[in-house]
Image 1 (cartoon, one colour):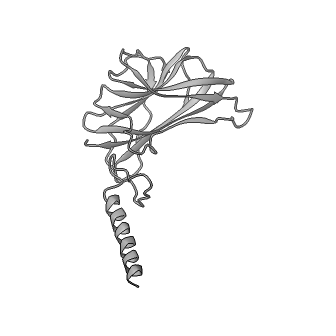
Image 2 (cartoon, rainbow, N blue to C red):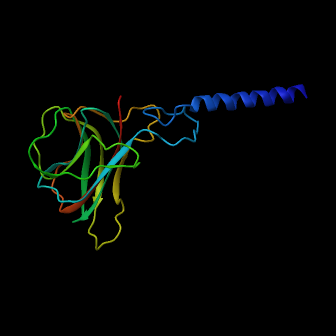
Image 3 (cartoon, rainbow, N blue to C red):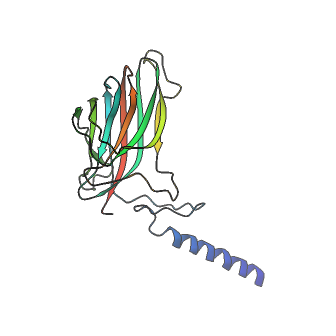
Length: 207
């Protein structure tokens, strides 16, 4: 009987310890320990944009960028690129700029908050149909290949390429600080005859 009570007490202690380790999970960069499942919805303000039907320039470089904020730290959670057109495998790179692009022909997709109670987002988005001037110092963070097919063919084998920074454990998300920095989707000088779609999602916090 004593052993049973000691075992039960040990299990209760483990449960309490696990619960304590879940406190605060859901905020910026607060992740549970590996193997733990904390049932808590993230609370940090989260935003996104989707640019639909981007016509890339010839020898396309940046087709979409997220520009940082003067008042908040931006942490990118997800980037998704899809599209249709003439069959081609498009190399997609994710770059970080320490100096913002200039020039080019661009439009500004609407930035939306995932929670209507959140304040307006402070990061801004651009979608390019003519290549901007990219300054020195842009570094490649990630890459993948998008298999584009014509809409008449049907579903592509790889209908989109996803850069997921949510399931990163203790690794830091791509961070953008200040209005000079950007995270961009770049096509590495290819010329796809396609209509491309880019979605990004990110968080904004004071630090």
